[in-house]
Length: 475
Image 1 (tube, helix red, strand yellow):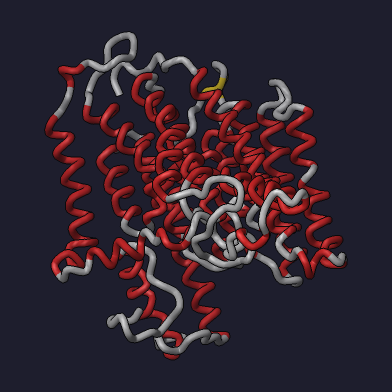
Image 2 (cartoon, one colour):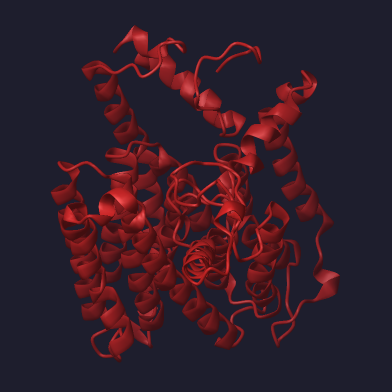
């Protein structure tokens, strides 16, 4: 990373918080024994077999934390279901759904990133809250935020749950708060954890008057509403509708071609742009939409407490709401909802249904990350294996209950097959490829956006219709 604004060494900016920079610094002390040249910041686009070996090995090594977190999460599964003792089967299913998660596998081990140990921190934090080890859970989450700030998506769930269940030490028989049970000591303890972690992370930059530069890198609003490949969210549907309306307007001569914005939504560039027909979207508008989408789940967590399970559902809704309505969302962010949803999927048939729709759709939306021909059979086979196991295992677990999918959901999920055939085996051989090269990405994004939005809505209906837990007299 250049230390002087006029010295350019890389087109990529350090857009992670300081703890991740320290993590990379620690890795560099091991990397030098593999290939010293990979540490030269001016050595752009450098590649070697030893560099690849180190990258693969380091991802696998750091995944040890993820494996431990999965082990702790499996301990948190209730031993009863509908009054009957559960076997170890749900724990085994959960461990497979997490450890062999298709999305995390391709993002970390094929596309190459270090999300495994970060999700390990998140899952371990969740497990600690299930185990009523609130201070540990809060500390782990605070550390996680300073490794990767995308986890701010789920911060409202943590804040409200810790305030409701830890800072207030008792509830009334009806589940409402006993206001006289508020503990200032616990609030101060939580605040001290957040302050100390933040001071350790950001303190040096504050002392050197570099904090504004750090924040500008962490929140690059000039990058535009959407990423180069539209994440399958609400704005993908919005963009697609604007595109369709602009095409219709041009065909009907209702729009002046000379007045259409030059920055195309489908040019593959990360940039700011103006919509053609619909109102253009600002960062403030996406923030307002995200807050509105999150608020009902947060209110339910406060007024209809359901213990750790309610916290987990609120966390997932916060992640999905931020994914659907956030600014410049990456497609990989869907894993913030998919992985925690795995914990709910082995508890109730309704949650299992939502998990399967969300996971299948969200995982398929990651296909464009692996775009080379040799990777095509690998990604298809891996997703088929994971999806087949997920559906068959959860159907077996809830075989005595109603089917996990209705006819419309089944039809939608089966539609992913023809979509993949068209995008990979039909479209490349048509004349449209030269004129409309963006169509496969557009179709994938829009189709998956519909499924993810449906799963979000279905989970919200489930949360809003659930009664308060009868086990909340004391958290």
